[in-house]
Length: 245
Image (cartoon, rainbow, N blue to C red; front, side, top):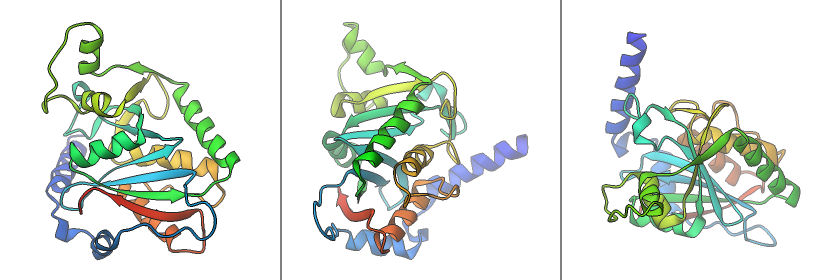
């Protein structure tokens, strides 16, 4: 057990120190040439979007799903539960307003966000929503500290020192839930993470979207979506960048 814990801590440390020049060359190429790819035919408004976030220096950081103007996401955000450099923690599901969230990511969290547009039929979107509802059956509402203080009249001043969820509630209409049981109750950086949620949703909504079980990180998801974008599969049909490269 001690060997495993030590290995995890070393991995987390190396990952946090990984410089941009060690990323695969194709990532640098894509981030230099990003732009929206024209829709093949009809309506260019996507039925669903997948967001891949790049942190400063080009490192992959996070991924989300968007439909009906709402971001759907999952991660490790309760600092009271952090273990081993945030490798473990309580799983937190959140929704947020899409446009406010993208502005928040660029202006307040210093991220570049790559947005992939997906074309689905109505049944596909409905199945995605059903999958989210199924996941949330094992969840309960959770309130970040700043929101709780505001709602109880114990007003605090907004500052950059606030936790991530408090900022997200204030800036992007964030709404949060934790899990009392099930797959997403506990977060684990290498498997039970944001990419797992995206994969669980994608595989329900379109027969052309069957991400491999090996897609366990935002970086792997990025490769998968790039491959679909450049293939004859028109399900992934556009790519837009938000923020600074």
